[in-house]
Image (cartoon, rainbow over the protein chains, first blue to last red):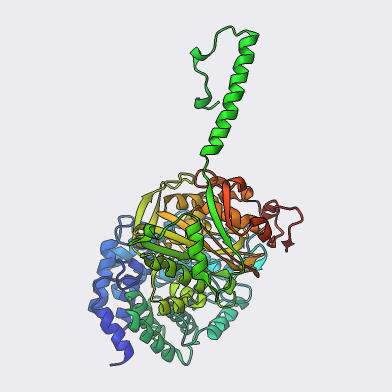
Length: 290
Length: 346
């Protein structure tokens, strides 16, 4: 049995998806597992987890990050992706309500501030209500809106603008801070990978995008930690630049995870990064936005 | 006028004579002076221990044990208790090791509390990175914990519980803490002594931002920023279980801290059970005025002393240790310096 079949085997039986083996149910690992299972053809298991997300959806369409917690609700983006991947018709009402909530939600904008390099007036999405928009939640919601066929929507376009704005001058990104008091901040692999995934298919000649892809290529190796590695590989694969040794890296990461007791979160990311092409991913079947 | 300052109607005659006015004035003055003396007596005092000539490969266990002991802590207090050690791993990278608490300090602190009969866990909720494993590996902490047989709690993703905000300085009514924090008898702040480009200094109190879960507050924990950084620093400290501080002030950070600053070697370990007193002492060593650090202003007296005459210095003489840190040449930071000639950096 190949190592990646082992991952799918483990995920197939998952009842409670969490960030750690003993952790509480969480929406993000559940959504990522559902997408991974669907892509690998495990439709029943994928649907079971998508049902959990539907059960967790609140009246306003949002889904809290943890069970019994209405907020924060940024995983609503990933739930929409999971429902679209799993069965767009079956979950049509869930998707509609999730998208409606998404479009009424945004980060708290602020006037541009000379002390920071990014433009805080751009509307994106925040981690928590009434706070600024940051890189990673904006990436997740852009992916969800694109998968829902809303690539041309003004919120998607503005989200893409925010992601580009938050790239570091020499490439790469972090949580979403570029310059502070004139000093460039440090890039991180995980957020850069997610940013590149969200920008895939966009016509974007900003030099920072190319520099970000080069940063990822230079940063990923067999010892890169699991979630960073997976997002980095996804980011590169989505731009047709999957590392030649990606499978080797992922096998090493899987071995480390299995040794210490892997969570569904990490297994799902490994399963997603194991896909050599993006065409199975929700939103990547559609024509790129122009 | 505050309600507590209102005179009661039967305390004064309706037509006071000159003599009664003078007498009343004298009594009032004596009462004010007495109250001030009494108030001063009642204000909190604290011990802070500072050791010099410390090295990461030195006798840190002995230093930390000595420091805790001279600050009035006894082994029996920790017997069969849960101790959570909270290092600073905000955004680790191998290129900037002086950004994060050195693994040797974490391991040494763990050894002391284990010797004293406690169950020790190391926990952190990195504020800027979602990949906690990366934070552990890049900081060198993962390998050190493995070798020492210590468990790690990823505070960003655990179950959470709500606690009433006991500080009540920020608008937050309550604060969510992860399970490991709620279950701890003691939470020990193990910060790195650093400058901070927004608030001047980051030390033991600010380090407790990393006890709050990203899964509720985000990356960064922007909910806290929007409710006021100094206010929420104090609220978190007031709401946590019992806390202590052991500061890694061996290789510190000056200039553009807490991430991008330069290394400054100090060779110190600072220990105390009053975190405002520990941070005030660290500030003085760094050439900064504690009474001008916003979160220390708010914490002063309510949660611990920051005035020099109410902190009993243990170990080294404070005046011998002062070695001003460079701070960014920014308007909001310049006035924090003890001396107007303190070093600035662009």
